[in-house]
Amino acid sequence: MQVPAGFLGARGRIEAAVRFGKVALVKADGSFGRAGITNAAAAAAKAHQLTYGSTWAAAMSVALKAAWQAARTARARAAH
Figure 1 (tube, rainbow, N blue to C red):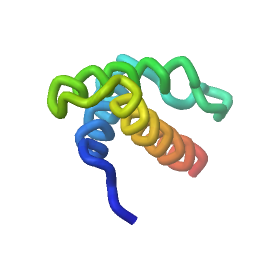
Figure 2: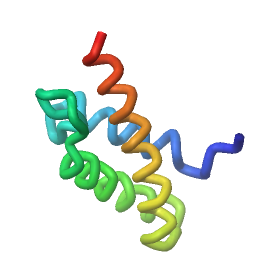
Figure 3: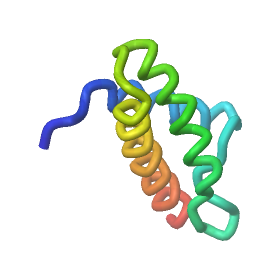
């Protein structure tokens, strides 16, 4: 499986946003924080657009994939 261009950078930006407390990908009850996921993805998509010059749709696609992957990882980490 090939990773889309900019995926790892988007994932890094999202994880940094979580680490610095800017967004919450998982709520206290263990459910996904969709607002936080969307906000993190939008910020990562803006950076992706600046770096790669892609369309907004392509940038959001990469960023949302990265955000949901980070959210699933965070939820699994919180469960254990």
